[in-house]
Amino acid sequence: DAGVTQSPTHLIKTRGQQVTLRCSPKSGHDTVSWYQQALGQGPQFIFQYYEEEERQRGNFPDRFSGHQFPNYSSELNVNALLLGDSALYLCASRPNTYTGELFFGEGSRLTVL
Amino acid sequence: LAKTTQPISMDSYEGQEVNITCSHNNIATNDYITWYQQFPSQGPRFIIQGYKTKVTNEVASLFIPADRKSSTLSLPRVSLSDTAVYYCLMTFGGNTPLVFGKGTRLSVIA
Image (cartoon, rainbow over all chains, first blue to last red; front, side):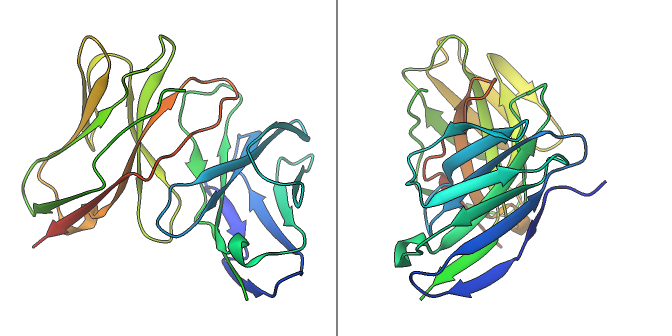
């Protein structure tokens, strides 16, 4: 049973560009959330998707947007990249019957030059 | 959700028991106490969760006093592979997102 998978694992962009990160949740999970983790910090919640809709959002600007597809996979889009967007982007999934355990992928490391 | 406070870092020798204490003075009645472990360049991994008293699994034990204002994660006989960052979080369930602090960086020394 594959866990949460994310792609790409690493990527480099320049300021002003746009990036799309992808996530496939663990089998049987229908809720996906995204977190941003800067170096030396804990992960920060970006948003959560369920039934193809954004259900909750953290304190991130509108440059950060997402999508969830009918197969529960998800994308995170970031427009007009800033140097400060350099971070590890983590996707996490959970089943609808939430027990408090989130399953995280290994992340996508974004470097903005 | 209640704010948590835990040590920034800890060192331990292999084979020792490690106890990491987390303070959560404003814990709410519905909050569960949950610990995650994170290795470098990987996503956090759920370790253990509890509401009160003691919880034990194959990886760790979690001790929660009656007032629930603190909790202690206990890792028995640590090895070098336990070197990681450990996060203490309050989880409510439903759609409440996880709120991570900076965690405790545990370094296990041979």
